Amino acid sequence: MSAVRFLVADSSPALQTFARNLITGYGFEPAWVAVASTPEAALASAREQAPHFLLTDCFSKEQTTGLQLAAEVKKGTPDLRWALMSARLDEELDTLARNAGAMFQLAKPFAAADIKTAMGKALEQWGQDNHEVGRRMPGYRRPRAVPVVPVVPDVPAYKAGDYVEYQGVRDTVRHVIFRRGELVVQLSNVSGMVPATKLRKL
Image (cartoon, rainbow, N blue to C red; front, side, top):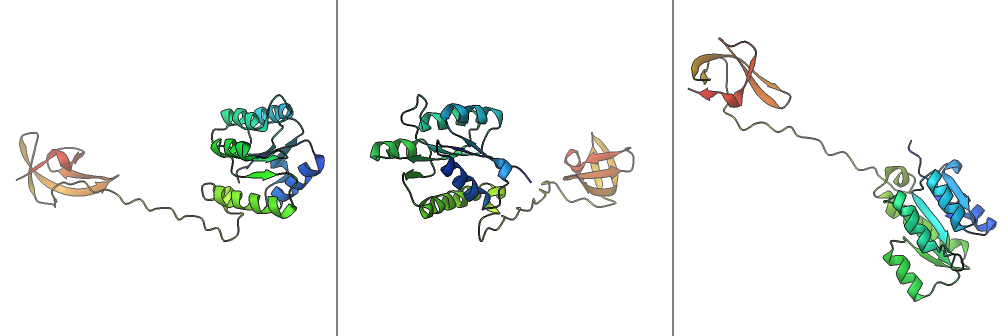
C-alpha cells in the first residue's frame, strides 16, 4: 500500500484537527496527514516529506501566501493536488486559485458540511487517476488492465518439409516455432534457429 501524504496548513489548531479527522475518515493513515500553522512550517514539512495534497489557508497577511505556498510545494511535487481556504475569498482570489490549479476554494467561515462536500468531490476526482485514493471512494471500481495481444510478424507461413532459401543456399524446414513474439525456423543444414524473416520460400 503506497502512502498518500496530506499537508494541512492553517493557523487554527481546531481546523487542523477537523481536517485531519476528515481525511483519516476516508481510511487514510493518520501518519500520512501532516499539519502546519504557518507557511514557513508548511514549506519545511513539504521539503521533509513531499505531500500529494495540500489544504492551505490563504495566509493573506503573511510574507508567503497560500498561493505562493502551493507554487513552492508544487516545485517538489509537480502532480500536487491542492485546495484553498480564505476569509478574504473574493472573485480575484478565486480566479487566481482556480488558474493555479486549486481543486476547490472555500470562504471562511464555512460549515462542516461545506468542507466535507468539497473534499469528497476533490478526492473522487483525484481517485480517477490514483488507485490508492480512488479505492477509498464509494462505488469505485479499479480499471481492468487491457490485455496485451502479441503481434504476429507478417511473414509467410512455414511448415516442416518446406523448401526455403537462406543466405543464397537452398535448405529444408525441420521445425517452426513462435518464440518471444518472433517466428523462428530450424533448418536441416543450419545449426540453431533462424528468424523466418531471413528466409525466402521456394
